[in-house]
Length: 114
Length: 112
Image 1 (spheres, one colour):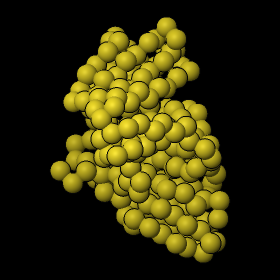
Image 2 (spheres, chains in turn cyan, yellow):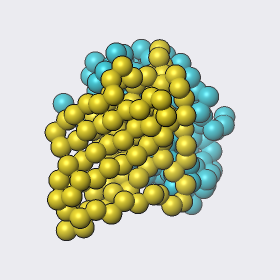
Image 3 (cartoon, one colour):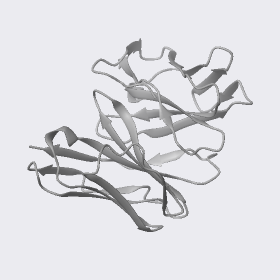
Image 4 (cartoon, helix red, strand yellow):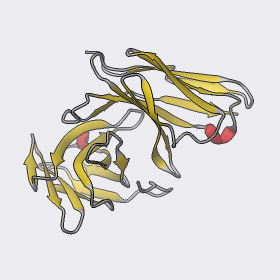
């Protein structure tokens, strides 16, 4: 099992540009989460999907952020337009419905907006 | 969940000693707790979990203790090794919810 796969690992972009982060959850997991980690705020839940359906997006900072899960094996987090304050590490995690197995995180995408 | 802030609590231990990392949670409805280890440049990695109907659970070199009365969780690492150096987070979730709330991280530094 390759685990949760995120791409790219690092992204440097200019302010105002569109950024798309990608995630492939573990096969068979039906819950998927996007988290953001910064030194100031730690780990924050942005959005979570259950069976490909967005259940709670209350953590999404503003309309510039959007997330999709077109199928059980792929999700994207898009920022348009990006701003320097969006610089952070973005993690994707997936889990089985029964929660007994915990959550598996990907290695993250380090986003730097200059 | 609580924010990590600019300065993480740090615990320094000598190699071979036991480590105890503490965590307080605020939601009395939380019923499932997880400890994660995060090494530099990596995502949080599952270490051990415990449900609210238990007060202790042991794994390999790790033990989690849960005190629901005071809403306190601890992670004990036996015979701490240099490879244990990382930031450790506790996380919790409530009944019927899949959303994790992360607590403040603690940075563990192991002195060889």
